Amino acid sequence: MKELKFVDVGEGITEGHVQKWLVNDGDDVKEDQAIVQIETDKAVVNLPAPISGKIKFGAKENTDLKVGDTIAWVGTADELKSTGGAPSAAPQEAKKATAQPQQAPKAPAQKLQPDQPRPKETLATPYVRKLARDLGIDLATIVGTGPDGRILENDIRSSARQEQVQQKPVPKFSEVLEKQHEEEVERMPMSQTRKAIAKNMELSWTIPRATHMDLINATHLYNMVKKEKPNAEKLGVKLSFLPFIIKALIEALKENPRFNASYDHEAQEIIVKKYYNIGLAAEGADGLKVVVVRDADKKSIIQIAKKIQELHEKVVDRTISIDEMRDSTFTITNIGSLGGGFLSVPMINYPEVGILGVHLIRDMPVAVDGKVKVGKVLPFSIVFDHRVVDGADAVTLGNALIKYLEDPEFLEMLG
Image 1 (cartoon, rainbow, N blue to C red):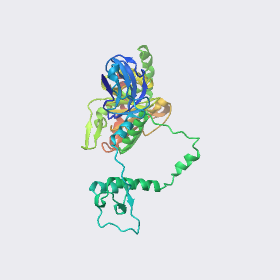
Image 2 (image 1 turned 30 degrees about the vertical axis):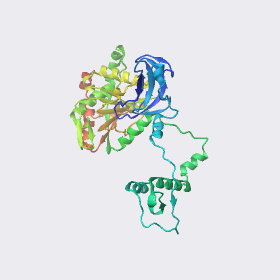
Image 3 (image 1 turned 90 degrees about the vertical axis):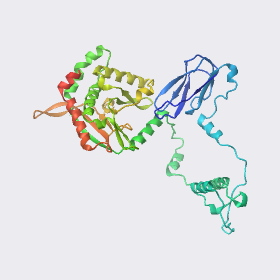
Image 4 (image 1 turned 180 degrees about the vertical axis):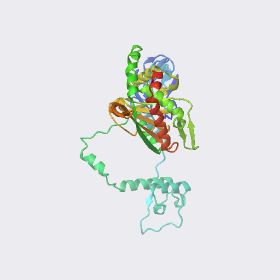
């Protein structure tokens, strides 16, 4: 018999969610057959059967898992008789419940009345004293049930429970409003992906950030993409502006290496990366993800475009893997692909040093050789970690990006 457990898959993932069983409890399964879909913070993955045999569920659909929890057992019918089967509650809840040993009932703690004589000395261990402080219990008001009136842990917890019963908290204003509209509101549980996004946003918010914004005359870039699109289509590739922006960004990062980095808070060191894995913010049905074009500096425009297309399709059909969303060194968010926005302040993809936001290319007046013409203008914003780089560094990075994307020779070389 083989036990299938939820194992540590790295990337700080400690929780999962049983989204869907692909077989029935008690079915015969074959080794490596996909049997269950598990949603983690990063992706939805299909787990295979470890061996061939009959399957017995260890967790039901729509329950949460922690690392080490049993998902299923696979073996012979006789072997499976000794297993417990899927609990009715989420596995970690069941585990939490069984982890607390039951104690024999004790007499409830008594509180001293104001006119009741107090003992000369309060007898309690340091642990009990700390517990009382944590729960806001005054030891002087407790009559201990232990030897010689010693105050026990149970006395403190019993007193705390009594106070909770006696106190009637005033409802929050929001709770009052929600009660008034209880038939007109809906509480929506967050998916594992949404929880991960919330966690990452909280981490991002710990970064002291600042923003630099500027405009690029993208007329040459626009014409280059228009020129190369038919050639890319013959190769089955949908060409956009993004691969050219990625190549230009990499050249700008080479000139400004502290942006292709992360910050080690504990050691107070800047970890400069000598490789270029460009993260791309991608919106899926289940929320925002960051997919990674690895070694983008070693890929051609067509190879990058093909990789972007492949990653996008996987995000849409929810087959993206954890490996395809890890180890980015600098991230781009393409706000322009959504059809709007002029300038924005994107959230840094923790623990990176910066993020580039590119926006919708618009027809705008541009000055060329002292004359004003209508050109294609690309607004961009660079949000950066001010612990690692300064505003002047961001301006330098932005100017380098402008230099490459406005250079017809550079763009021709890429095309």
